[in-house]
Amino acid sequence: MRSREEKKRRRPTSIELGERELLISWQDGHRSSYALHDLRLQCPCANCGQARGEPHGPQLIGDELPIVTAASVNPTSEAKGFDPVGRYGIKIRWADGHDAGIYTFEMLRDFTIE
Ligand SMILES: [Zn+2]
Image (cartoon, rainbow, N blue to C red; front, side, top):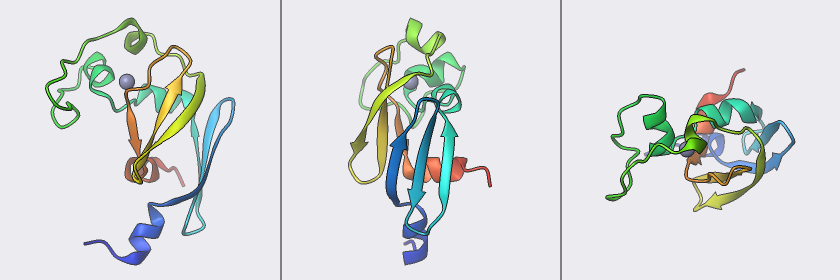
């Protein structure tokens, strides 16, 4: 179980997508900014993980086979938008059509460079 403070830390109050960065304000007042380039390189989907040579363990959803696509080998860092995923994360719609990665707020908050 997480404390109230811990929940606040991981809940955004606003998310803004800029040309080169994603800005998130959190309920505890902290603000984070992420270079889209870095987010794309760390795309959490199974395809990109495999392209990076990471084992596809918990990232593999269902029985979907990870396929290394051109998009995951030569990723763009241009984002067209993002969609909420439940209450726990967002999907970024990249300009090359890739949108498989779910960036959880927990992961995003932990990315934060103070
Ligand atoms: Zn991906």
